Amino acid sequence: MGSRILTDWTLPRYGEEDWGQDCRNFKAAAEFVAVKLLVQQARRRDTYSVAIDAETKATLQRYVGEVRDFINKSDMPVPKRDRLLACLSAFQAELDQERTDLQKLGALMCEAANTAEEVVRYVAPKLWRMASALGLARDAEDERERGKQLTAPSQVNRKRIEPPKKPTLKRTTFDKKLDDEIPF
Figure 1 (cartoon, one colour):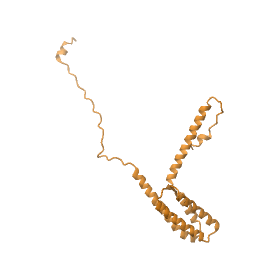
Figure 2 (cartoon, rainbow, N blue to C red):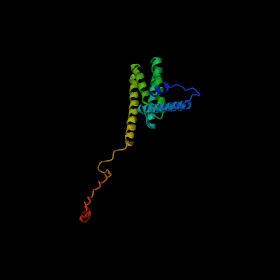
Figure 3 (cartoon, one colour):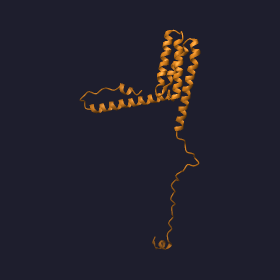
Figure 4 (spheres, rainbow, N blue to C red):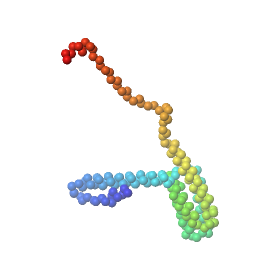
């Protein structure tokens, strides 16, 4: 969407009359696209990831180790084992990040669902516990975010600025003496 700004751009020739202005315009457009992409990535990263505490990370690492040991001991076909271990390694690498990508666990769950039944019986409960731990961390993060939001002031104790008072018009009354002196 934002990158279309740059695809239709024509490069100016050096020495043309508006060469300097064209370069400044191109730089501004490129910076606009870069900032837009960074904002989109930041929003996406926060939406599909969660920050987890050290205790939860340790628990998830333990589950990953148990699943890895079971998969290595199982007699599943080598290509399936390799794909499952690759997904498990990708999820484990995410656990070391500041925010854990939830999609890595989803990929691991999809790959595990495609394995032999005896593997699924052991792996599925572990994956369910991992998903529950990440879900609880996500709920806690959402609760912290709600706590940061400002609450609306109550209407009862709310101080209000009084509107300006309308000036009252004083009717001027003429003194009868002055009125008698006017000749018309």
